[in-house]
Length: 237
Ligand SMILES: CC(=O)[C@@H](O)[C@H](O)COP(=O)(O)O
Ligand SMILES: NCC(=O)COP(=O)(O)O
Image 1 (spheres, rainbow, N blue to C red):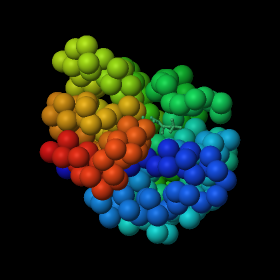
Image 2 (tube, rainbow, N blue to C red):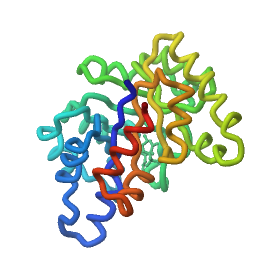
Image 3 (cartoon, rainbow, N blue to C red):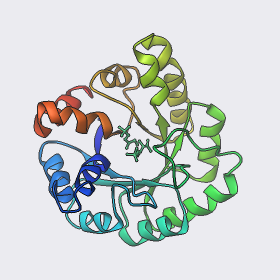
């Protein structure tokens, strides 16, 4: 079964716009779980533009599904993750001011750094995932660094889908097979949507997890949160 982890960053973006607690990020996360989400993803950025450290602490004891924390492994992030002990940490190579994630790691160049950080999380019993492109060398070095899983950066698939979906998915199928042969678990995310998710899943049904935020929360404006989550789950069958 491919799990759906709902990324609630955008719920926090809306909440932060007014300075109060509407919408309530914790309540939305718990409702996502109630409506069928298999996990919750957050990406606390250093400027706390959406998810704040306090959200991460508030969510941890209340979530009943898998908690995935994404981010660049700066000392503050590492400290937060080790204190909160989520089910999974996903390392992303984002600079502090970046608008959104726009690339996977160069795992070869960063092998020593990633190995050291992954060892700390592995020792703490936290499953680790490394955000990568479909370049098989990057996947190979993620395995060498000690990752349990890789998360494929799916923006190139999403942007190529409308033009030629067979061509868009092909490198992801190859990367997925390569990761599977190395014994790595496989996650995927970024710009997945109701339009492109089912085709991705049909081609890579051994995916462990997709994390989806931007499109899913936008769809919820029209469909409501419950129906939206049900529709995304249908895409994973
Ligand atoms: C790691 C990744 O793919 C991102 O999609 C990210 O978690 C989204 O971050 P923002 O919500 O800050 O754009
Ligand atoms: N890891 C990807 C993620 O959590 C959500 O990305 P997006 O759906 O907001 O693009």
